[in-house]
Image (cartoon, rainbow, N blue to C red; front, top):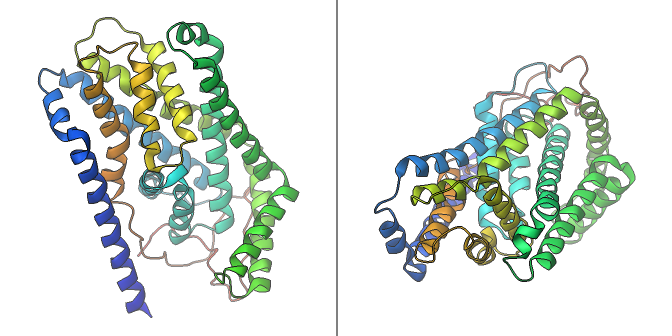
Length: 370
């Protein structure tokens, strides 16, 4: 059995490696991107370019801090940052290679549970994290519409229609996440529906047993979520980290702009433009929002870059913000061994998850994967 699991894990790792190489090869070959990118390095200011790359690393670190904060809040024992950073990079990788970034959160959930985190805590942490992330993006979208609307409308035809569609999409995601996080009835029906669907397609073979486990974990999720909501300091820190994370990513085009020796410092305008690019990309059903991300960048950032360098700027931006997530994330995306189980040690104010009768169930935490 262990040999089969080890073989499956190796096949999974090889498949991820092959996929990563395939995506990079596509980027290099498509439209002669590699030659254009190499040509663009001539004459660039590498100080500004390194700041742009550093912004992406900063965003990863902030995301890891959010994960660490949410998981550590549930346990007496500290959850190490290196484990939180792995969760972040797993999310970055699978978000980058799947349409609508659908695999990011499920793979992060799997990673957390293999680290020994209770499934209830993992679920509540990821939902709250994603809710904060989407709420912050919606705030940026509203900022673009209210503060920078006249600036973009006078220069880009049809801006308002795209802005409204993007904002409504982000708002709808926030509403659904809010219902999931705060409405037990909605959450129960949604998860029960998922169990029924998985039973019909024969993924879940014991629906009654699975339903009971889901019910226990759901009750724990709701209670744990209530405990998290009451911690205002933690909530402020999470929003603060998320604002820094998004601002760092949105600032990358500005540093690329400066790397091309452009005068002036339209920092806020470029932050707004990048948030709008993210808005448009969010509802594109292709891995990495391929096509929509590049196209919206070329349309919006033609306001700032010269026509002879805007394609090089777009490729640099795409490589720094997207392909770097694939390259670096590939080193973290493999499945790690399950953590050894032990008796849980929760904070006094934390909610304890349900434990299986044997006392050695999968809900017991351990931060030291073997």
